Image (cartoon, rainbow, N blue to C red; front, side):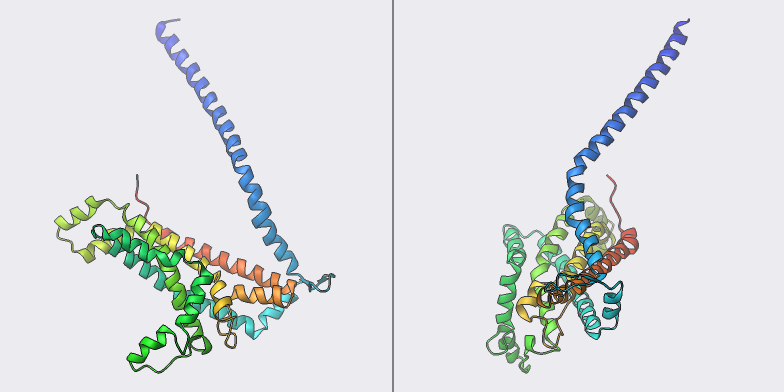
Length: 317
């Protein structure tokens, strides 16, 4: 056998051995990966998928806690909700709350992040803490604070609007103003969190891009829409998803500030579930509402990733 043949043969053998070793490492690595994921999967199955499935199962029964016997009714609970005007009012309230909070909170968070990202010297950290501070306040404490601010007699809102000649507003006691009042409070509470996410994303944008655009004559407004905003789309998608989830999880401020009133004008899905499950002890109807809530949220998130996610630009490494 010539030297060249030996080299070629040895190369084939060593190449085959290397491929087999790589495949073995891949199989072992895959198995190890599943072992590492197993605790998380068990936790997810026990505390996420099982409760969702059990809730869907209970939605097929009429069950009051005071009566331990569960009566199978099939889809009767869903049909009852379909014909229930209060359910549609609650759903409308929740959608109105989402439309009122999501755009304003995202826009305000982005605007303040751009401002704080400027060269402000030593005051930058002070502004960051001051703007983020509402997020650190517990929701119940913040809700109690805003109950006082919206107080029609001694509240700050009516105190300052009186100087503008605006008549006194009952805010939390007026069926037309109660939900907008909760929306205002929620925007104040959440914009700092979104600002922090946008600020982190802004600091990850290379400064060379703005410098090059400035040399080419692009102004600040054009640089923002052509460079900054497209590169912020991954952060915007994340903020949008979090905002949608938060808008449908609203509960504390409704519970503390209005108890769903006046005349159910601030009643939302989570509070409606709480009423059925823990005030009326109608577990079957509470489970039905929970199942609808989860499905609605899941559909919204899928639509966001389907139609908004495809427009997200991810910068290559």
